[in-house]
Length: 312
Image (cartoon, rainbow, N blue to C red; front, side, top):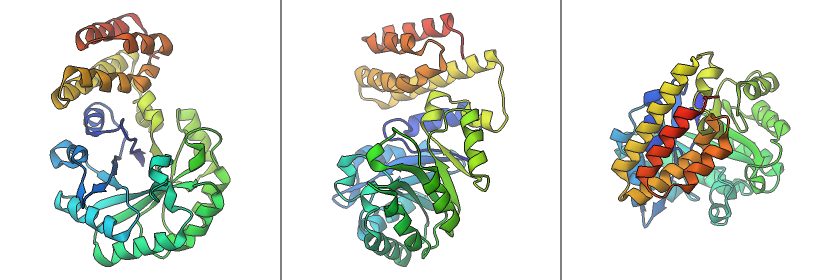
């Protein structure tokens, strides 16, 4: 099983919809975290959860909360939108989140996590999984919450084995992932640093009992990666056709959903910060896109990149 990770600002409904229409290999799509303000979901998040924007077979909203009341309110709203399972974010590493006691900011507080989960299972009837880090500042924090997580009927635990302070740099903590896998009563999903089939094979060799894998930046850089891991291969011409169709669909959807061409261009430049890696001369491609001033010149530059460069 392969999941697409929820990456704020990148795997939005536009990306998920275009990806599912173009590429095989992903079994579940996770919506980047949804949060509350004044007892309601932020307006910018509504497009992310609308059923018409989430036609894939399995779509799981991720939520950000630090109290049972906040979590239950979120769940009620998401249930009204037709969702039957959610994922609790206990892994976001950014200080603007952790300083509010959310995301990985929950990890040093086993009692708070127990209270939050108790409140959820007393009042909600949706399936719940959690996604967590190796800790906020120390792996011992995650070790201490395993007995708490084992008390509740969670569907699975998704682990990114870095502490929050690392963000996305430095080595992943394979020992910590193994410890969670061996001591957790729930299925454990691996997430982190799978950028190639070789990297996946290495991780699978380290964790042979793991059957589900969450991929994030590796997919943004190579949308064929989930298919390649599953042994689904394409010719160079098929790759080019799919990549061009994918890019065109992304551009169309952003054009339809952004309020002006400037914002559409900004979203496309953000998309290219990863998409450019499908081309052998990644720095040159990205530099050209970054210099683009309007959507007209952007489409011309994109045509030139596809015409003149071999897909890697």
